[in-house]
Figure 1 (tube, helix red, strand yellow):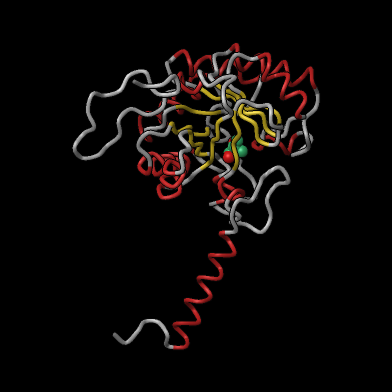
Figure 2 (figure 1 turned 180 degrees about the horizontal axis):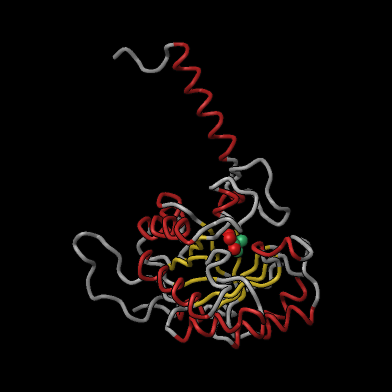
Length: 276
Ligand code: KIV
């Protein structure tokens, strides 16, 4: 018997070739509102998406943080649709049951409702993503409404919005209560099934979580949100520095450097390969 958290419709059998039964749906995620806090993580390739799923994380965001943590850009703004499609496909291939949210990159939804919808459709049809996310409050509410009207579930994103952070107060904590509430309400009323609150004052995030009927997904927004998301590379310690709100659960960057150094030493000293 599927629990409330599981998809309501399952195929009656698992195909012999092992391809997925149905993925966790946006509706199932929405029904987690107000229940046990649930984790999301970003992923950008098949193996790490598979590790996340194996670890029991069933909502994966292919964030446009791709630009910073994988592609070597300083910003997310240069990230293109083709790059996001490429990495979203990899994450979908690496998972079977997880809900995969594809982040709409800067320039893919700002121009018009039509263009936003066309690009959202590409994520669903060409990459196999389960939903899309876009940044913006009141100003992007029409885009969210246009995409959801076509049957594509949308996650909103307010607070710090990295695609346009340079135009405003950068990555500083957002604490303008009236502004945040106006944006959060606009996103929810436009039909989003969840909303990311990035670097938002924890008290305000708690109040927004209390008011909205859709799950809030916090990143640097306190413990009262319905869900938490972290960037994979921050959590795994793949870079020397992580944002202050991120907890480093491993030091894989250092482990990788140590392993590579040992390999290089072994080759130079003749310890690898073994003559046998
Ligand atoms: O791009 C991303 O990884 C994100 C998360 C930080 C929410 O938008």
